[in-house]
Structure formats: structure tokens, C-alpha cells
Image (cartoon, rainbow, N blue to C red; front, side):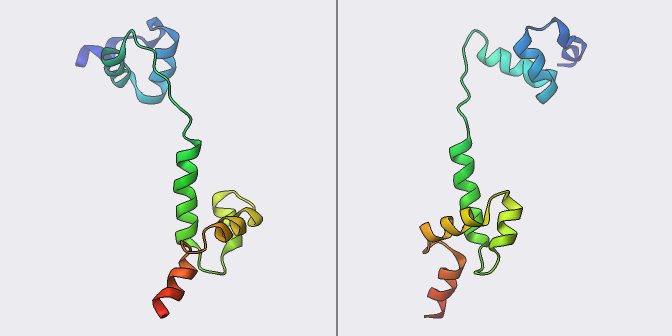
Length: 101
């Protein structure tokens, strides 16, 4: 609704003001309409993001790019080696080896 653009975020309660900066006034008002009066908890995404990141690392691993993967994902080379050691069947190198057989 066009009139929503006339709302000054400064008149909104604090949680709404912070959200306006992230997603805009119209989306904040939509959220408020849907969830007003409710407490909403956003669980941390660390575990989910780690799963996706690790899968990408394993998919991108070619047997000789540990240093590049560590740099790309902001991890240590030792951490990449440990991930690969813990998931040998999932690494690209092992899939390539299986295709040759």
C-alpha cells in the first residue's frame, strides 16, 4: 500500500526500526501484521550453514586444492584436510576414482 511509505520509522518501536534498515518499511509492516503480539525466536544458522559450506568444499576438492579452499572459505588448511579425511567417500577425488573403476 502506497501510504505505508509515509510512515516514519522513528515512530515505530525499537525492534521494528532495526528491521526497517534491513528489509524496508513495507516488509516490516507485513511481518508485523502477520506476527504482531507474538515472540519470534530466530535460531542460529551456524549448523545449517556449516553443512552447506562443508558439502561445497567436498564437491570442490580435486585432490590438490586444499590451500585454495582454505583461503576461499576462510578456514585453515588443517581444517580442510580433516574434513576430507572425515568424509573420504564424498570428496570429488574419491568419486573420480570410483568412476575409473
